[in-house]
Image (cartoon, rainbow, N blue to C red; front, side, top):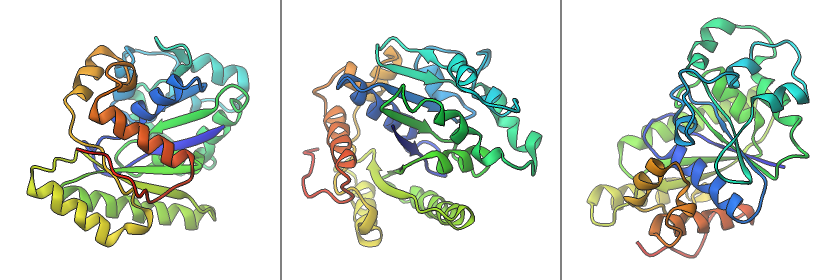
Length: 264
């Protein structure tokens, strides 16, 4: 089982779209896939037709029990409309966890312990992270084998990337771990100067970990979310779907920098 976390300390950069799109492609290829919603906004939970305001049980309950066993973890997981794609949903109550838990020990590994009971049930797990540092972000980074950092190709997003990398390195030092990561340019529009210059900035400053293609602007993403389907199950031939398919191929092959490019 491979665990991927999708994170950036800036909202609106395509985290949920990236997690859903990659998970959908894995499901399309027959892989048993789980998505985990760790964002208090519950966007991924809503995407698949569940209400984060009322859903019970949810990810919140993982932080409330003393012992996490296989039966308990599986009781939280819900089936989506796709055969091989399941979700561990979020409730908006997880927004209170940092205040509730304070400095309580062991909470940084709660999700690691929960996911460990699922290794025989899933091939891939995709975690959608909150845009702020806290117990949820710490859990997501501690749990993952590979971190994917979507970065919108506009200059305000560069600060979010810097904060995300600072957080990543801080957790690596604290946990004595080394987390592989890939930076993924998103919402690229070759017609705008902001996108072109932002992409060049990423190439100049983060080449070692930058995926050398990009996810283009594609209105089909909004349409697929309205239908509650990953874009791979909505319009597989669109630019966005093809870009995420290439990204999935590259990260599964362990590539950080890809020489091919998607035509946008």
